[in-house]
Length: 311
Image 1 (spheres, rainbow, N blue to C red):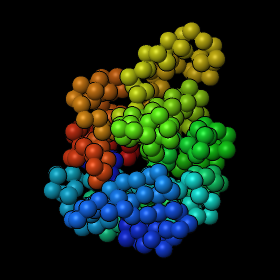
Image 2: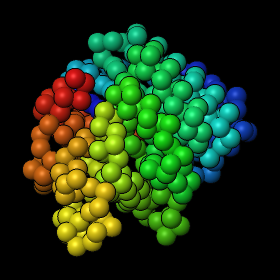
Image 3: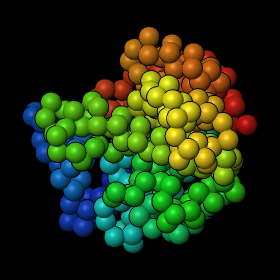
């Protein structure tokens, strides 16, 4: 079994956040005796800082205990820091990537790694991606955009061009939606993150970027959000409207099969549907470990997509 979707915070990264807590508006809130603290970045990216996020031995042993042979480990989306000046984002990115590389070097039998890049400065982001991959990382985990800019905005071309040149994995992982309608009942987590992925991936699919940057390996988190379920609607729009079809060389369903998808769905019928529509060679086992609602170990064990991804 493999796991393409797992997160970790190295000790030196946590130390950097503690030293720079005023700069990044980080705070820790107690959840009660014998409970891990809630960590909050910039008053919006709250998560439970469980021991498995920060204890390398525990993180590794949990993988082994679950029967996971290899994990693609990623930085935490809450620490993308796109809201801050690029020099702050770049500083943490560099430290985070170095520490993920050290983690991989110590545990080559268990881990491969992805970088985080300062997407709020695309030129810096492209340089950091190059450095990280030259050091042995497989690509980068990135958000669905920066502020209101989607990833197909021309400002991000340096990242796309470098990722294409390197044959990088870009694991698109949303942050919580900032739509204020979703603030109650944890809807920002339960549906907002899926909506962010859906908007981002639909834009990429319809933009022609999947033809333009054929060497980039794009993984969509959480089963691709709502995109696979609504691919019929995109196909219908392609048939109906020239401004949808004019930049595409095939119907949207064909482009859907160029993404990779993790299996974090918690529902057999949804999982089976995803397999049926994109194929077993495009669905990767993933868990989102060690977040509170991770699907750990992954509810998918086929190795076909994993082997294809790392060709």
